[in-house]
Image (tube, rainbow, N blue to C red):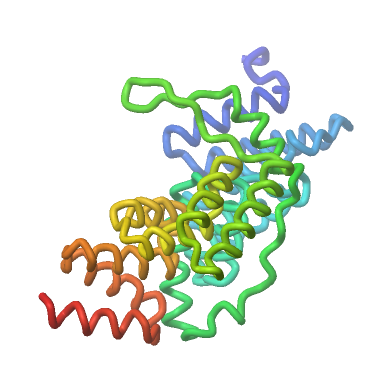
Length: 304
């Protein structure tokens, strides 16, 4: 028995906490993670990344147990130790959402999307918070938000490096994760997008499409490039292509007003009035006083 009760290392305690968490024993998991944190602090070798993970894990236990304020505290400590960690950002966002602190939840969800635009939980959370904040604060809700931090390029590059060699299992096949573009690629993409914008102002939509297409090769996660190219496709009557670009933009931001409106326009031209009305209703939930959306809805309802 004495052998069994020997002092455990923090890594052993962390593993034990993980096992409790997996079996739904969240209170026990939190207690074990607390012991692991004490062990790391006692050791004198306070590796910020190790402590950050432990605080984030304990936060997950608190969140599952409904102890949202403790979850927020631990996530904040975790993020102080290692800024812009995706897991603590998402856990804190979920805790803020449960506490009805919708502005703070929105900021955390949006920050997570800056780091990795392919997180379904962050997209869904952003969409929910947009609807909640529109109901609570009206159309000016964005003006009342706290400052959304800008994620340093070094953080994105670190994630890109970590994921570039990883693969994920999906439906029995292995596929590569999208990597985050580097600073050079982002700058090149921005330059090409601006060149495309200049062509749009001249009415040269086909030339603009070429520029936007080149831009997306350098950065495939820039929402406005998709919505801008969709506008051009609409202008040259390439409606199916416009649909595809709007769908890609909405995959990145499910409440994007321009993508919803332009997809509705494309559906209208393709005579899919039901889908058009669905998009416009979604748009008007996010922005109820959008005049263009209201007018197009009236127009399409007469055709139906």
